[in-house]
Image (tube, rainbow, N blue to C red; front, side, top):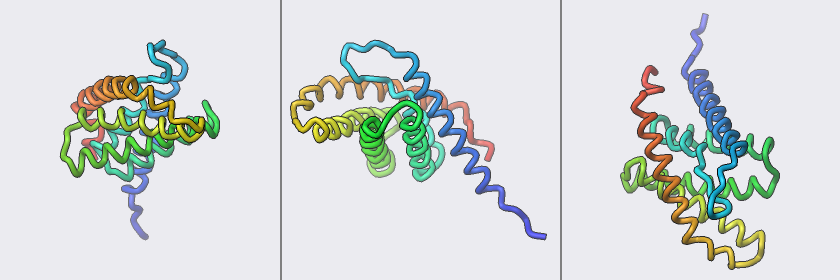
Length: 170
């Protein structure tokens, strides 16, 4: 009789729970529309889960959580256009946070700030192509401020959550 390797099942279960958590946070943010001074600025609560996964698991696990969340959000809340904006912002943010943490050896909150800013830049790139104008870049200073504040908040939340040692019993 062969023994079953539970590590793959455990990893799949963990990734699934993280995707579900990120999706729920996205849903909450979608349903509770917090009015902002500048249109389009959000806290990006689901990014807490992506950053947490990047800090506590692996880059590939965090990537799977990001892609899973993007696809679920697009299917339930959006359309192809919203998927393009979210995917470009999310993938650029993910790449920047990976480089910030692994190559530059930055801590969680500075990496999250860079991720927040790069997410907004990724979305401006899509807007520039979709609207066929570079005029959207006038929002960049405001989006840098918004990305910095959201990144600070999300980075601090990940530091607080990481203290709980959620996945330490592996």
